[in-house]
Structures are given as structure tokens and as C-alpha cells.
Length: 272
Image 1 (tube, rainbow, N blue to C red):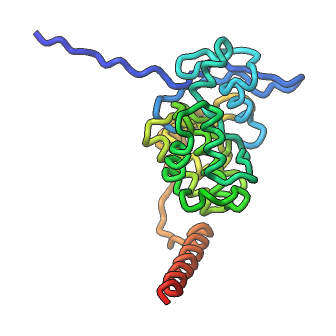
Image 2: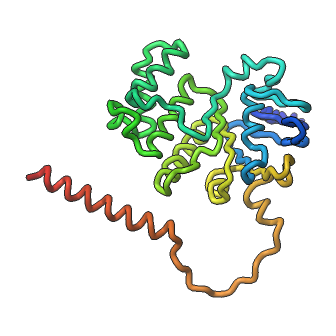
């Protein structure tokens, strides 16, 4: 007689049940429910004013919900906010870097604030992970938008929090910088970090998320994988149409070729 051992499913990294929030007479969240699997990317998709940032601020203990419950790593965000803060990191809509300091100095500062041993080694490791080593000695004010955002995310990962909240991380970035941030987010999830991402960009959710929840007028109206969401609509009738390149294809091809030419010319000048 063989006894089968049932595998116990891992508890959700984030569990949200019936969360409500109002500001005076405006009800922003009207009973939000969802859960996030550990090590996955969960995208909260919605238009401006849908309540995405409000929900993230509740989960990160910056706001108190009017109703419902939420747990992060099994910890109630209202009952024990300090323990929640020890398990998370929050990256807001705008990069919170000190532009007077160099990239490395920003990282060292945060490592010291977290009372980590050898903050210089921590900073060097993160600069390498985020392809910023060559720019580490430069002031953050000289960084491009994508580099500044990568530095911001690197600062959020000091002390390896298991959960990171990214609130519209690519707002205002150019196409190349957006792709850099996307690659960073994918790398985080591949390393086991749970990512809750808010965005208003459909392509961003499509590129990154394991599951997508659409928040509309304070409620989750649909929640599922990209495949599951696509099945909500009937398949379109297929006709042969010659595919035209998108503007993004044109931009990245031209800019990529231009950068390659500049690199080649720089190498030739060095050889001289």
C-alpha cells in the first residue's frame, strides 16, 4: 500500500480581502480582493485615478484602509506595520535618488541606514547587478532616465526584501529606458522576488506579468493570466495583412544602429 504525500501549496505572498478606502466623499476602493503568488509578477492595471497607488500605499503601510484586510508575507498590514516594512520595498512613480551624490554613494547611504555590514561591498554588488558599475562614480544628476530608475530599484533591493512594490515604474521613460526597466523586473522575479507592479500601460502588463488584475472604479473587474484574459473575447477573424513595422520597431532599429556606429567609431579612434 502506497501512501501519497500531498504537497502543501505555498501561502500567498500578498493577500487582499475586501479593502475599502475613501477620501472624504470620494470612495476610491470599493472592496478589492486578490492574492499574489510568491516569486511572481502581479500587474495591477488601470487608468489614472483607478486607485492603484492608493492600494499600494495601503499595502506598504503608508495609508490605513477603511475596511477589509491585507497581509504581506502572512503579516497583517494594519496590526503589525513595522514587521511588514521589514519584508517589503517600495519604489514610487518618481526616482527617489539623491542627484548630488554619485550612484555608488546613493547605495552606500541606504546600506548604512539599514545598518548593513560592509556597505561599500553591498553597493558594488548592486552596481554590477544593474549594469551601473561604469557609472557608479558619476553623480546621479548625470544619469539618463532609465539609469536613474535602475539605480532607484537597486536602492530598493538593499537587504534583499522578499517583496517589492513598483508603482508605475516606467512613467515618463523613453522606449529604450522602459525596456531596461522591464529587463530588471524580469530579473528580480527570476531571482525569487515577488513583484507587485502598477501600470497604466497595456504592453507593460503584457510583457511582464504572470497575472494581471484590472482595477476599475475601485473594484477588480477581472483577474487572470494573459491567456485567460484573452479568452474572454472571441477570436478575431484572420485575414492576411502585410505586417507594417511599429513606431517602436523603427525607433529602436534606428537608434540601435546609430549607437553601434558611434561605438565602432569610438573603438577606431582609440586604436589610433
